[in-house]
Image 1: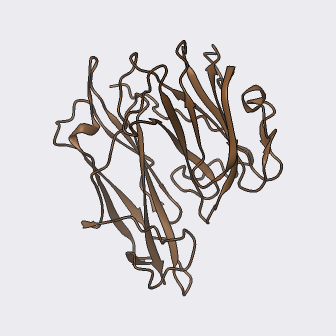
Image 2 (image 1 turned 90 degrees about the horizontal axis):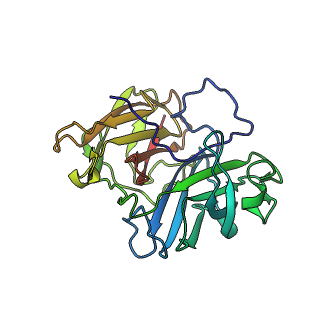
Length: 295
């Protein structure tokens, strides 16, 4: 079976660093995903014409990013079929600073194909600060540091009728692994209330259970899912796991091996695992999990 590339984010890397570094290891600020939702129901990934919608962007880094300056534009997509798409007519634009950049907009009644484009600037501010759609991709950057440029196609109903997938449970070494909102990636963690794993402790299994509804039935058949894995420390065996369309409905669990890093400071260090699930029709969900690596 031919597997399509489901990632609808186009990343234009500035100062990429080592091109041979594993793509599942987050060694610098990155855009990992984007997700479209309707304003009325976040589970719906494909807004209809005339509906209010929002696109949210997932940023990740090995140290705290805080509120990142960003500029985003929602627009009518141009007709290019090769290279990076751009804007034909701009609908709306938003700028600000946030840990999770987002842009709300109303889908025009005559929309044909929509695009969200923009940039996030961990070390500077967007340049230019306005006219994002018109500037992309040639002139859009940051006043300092790397420019995290992005482009996301927004699929529309009724041509595509799709919901964002969801995640039932994440487990670490067969124990439930819950979110820890108080964890600060890269920060000290001993006594922080999360799972603690010794540096150099070898391999640990991470499992993700998806609900049966995560793979919707479509006229073309059942959806298949792409699960992308990212970590800020240690090593993951592979970047992507697939749940094939032909897999039985009950086979909705995927797993991965994460190997602890070789060292940690005396106060320990929070690392983060990010799991992104895509359904191939514009639906996306992501989950973050933190653990404490100790000496």
